[in-house]
Structure formats: C-alpha cells, structure tokens
Length: 232
Image (cartoon, rainbow, N blue to C red):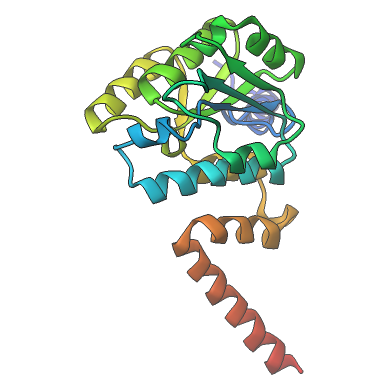
C-alpha cells in the first residue's frame, strides 16, 4: 500500500475542520432560552437537598446570567392560589416582559398549550431549565421537551427537591433520555465561550454569586493595581 502524503494532509484537515466546527453538543447563546419552572414561595420550602440560602443564590445566578447574555426567558407557575404560593417576586421583577404562564392545574408544564407555544415561539432549540421540584416539575418538562425534539440542559444546582436520593434518581432518569446535566457556573462558561469577550463583566457576575470567585477577583484587582503602580 503506497502512502499518500496529500491524502494524509487532507485527512488531518478534515478532522481539524470538523473538531473546530463542532467540538461537542454545547450551549449556543444564539439558540438558547431559559425556562423557570415553579420557583414559588411555597415550593421553596420543599427544597431540602441544598442549603436554602445556597439554592436561592443559584436560582438568582441563573436569572442574572439570563439577563447578562440577553437570553429569552419563559416563566411558569403551578396553582398559585394554593399552597404552592406565588412566584418569587425577584424573578418576576427581573423579567417583567417575559411570557408568564400561570398553570391552573397541569403538573407537567408541557401539558399546557400556552407554555409549549411560548417555547416554540422563541425559535430556540436549546432549553436551559431550572425549577422545583427536580423529580416532578423539572423532570416532566425536560423529558417532554426532549421527546419533542429540543436539546435540554438542566441546571442541577438551581433545581431542588426533597433529598439527595430523590435528586439522584431524577438525574439518572433524565440522563438516560439524553438530557444534559449542568450547573450554574458551567452553563455561564459554556455560553460565554471566551473570557476575552468580557472578562470584567463575566467575572463580576460570578463574584456576586460565588464567594470563592469574589476572592479570585480580589486577587486579580490587587495584582492589576500593583502592576499599575509599578508602571507609573
């Protein structure tokens, strides 16, 4: 068999081209919509797999990254007139113009025609989902959307439930259907792609919700100040 150097170069070029074009099935800021599922004041009391303050912090982190990347948001609640309670007012205030679907009884938001219509109307194929509780409100919507042909990314640390075993069972079920499990930080980083686009803005967003990252920024700002002084 004769070795063809030209053929080898063409092969390498093809591989490089395909890798750079699509490294893996990752989030695209131009093709994503964020779904906030049942972040209600009553349901917040059911979240026991995360510290309450930590969980709230991550939910608000997802809300802030939605604003930062200028992503469309869709909000839905379940039986606000009952013990589930109203939507967290902070989320409502952050997205006053977002589609708001108050479901009268449907447990699975995908059973509500208005909710599905709002999702389809965005024209986006990647759904970033967080909500309460992971095993019901989040899982049911995620599984339904995946079957309907959407790419689904669940924000695990912004989705809460009763305890760790329930959470793990929910994760396994969703993973088996091809749903991607991520966290707040990885979602933001994957959407950003490159620090050089807005190092300060992205880092400050992280510092607000991640105390350890705030210390990273303190170190960076101190180094920048020292560099400025030495060059003056």
